[in-house]
Image (tube, rainbow, N blue to C red; front, side):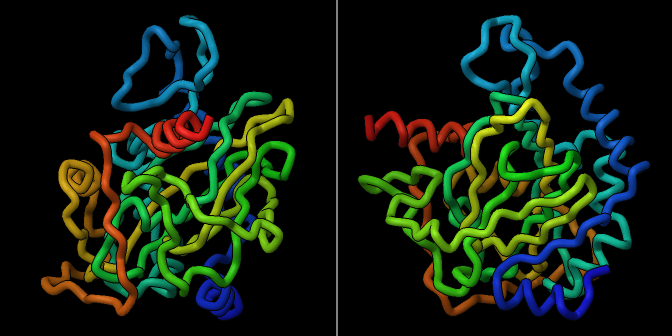
Length: 282
């Protein structure tokens, strides 16, 4: 469970980490599950509702970019999302009444893993308050060559930065970002990173010959209610479930203004949104 220093760092800087949060046996079981999920998937033949393939590969290419909602569809991942050790740590950061929000696996295959531009998670799914976070589990050792997470500390209390261009949500920060203050979070496999939903973060492409697979689980306080923005809200809320404490039948409202994203259609993922913005600028 997270200690007092890590809780203080999370509150002060918007993130903290815990090497060795997952054991070698837990990592091996999750990687086996991922191999089973991805087995046989190609660009030409894969379940688009469950995974997304890396671009720039032929029809028989088998490099997966993202697995969607593993904690909904696959028991070994759901078990981790409800583990007492994890929920005890989350309760120290968000309180006793906790909702599981979403899950995904970003694969970052060797020498091809896609870039993720600077963004804040809460820009995608506005809530009535900001008590929301993601837990990122490194399932491979991560460093700057294979695209480890980068964060900008102490920005999480300053509100949502602009993620739109021409009034349309782009899935990335569209105002200048001072990346000179960024911190690269390197760590061995099994490291858990607790990331505030308002903390700007990004990751570079994987230029190494080694994979960087990261399991990401989202949680929020039970009194953080979604602000309705159409079909994207309905889709995002379909995986939400209570994992600790009690359902809270009132919404707590924070003091920060919460920008509402305006989407063109229902985007598949942040990769899709960010690619559209890159194409607009060229």
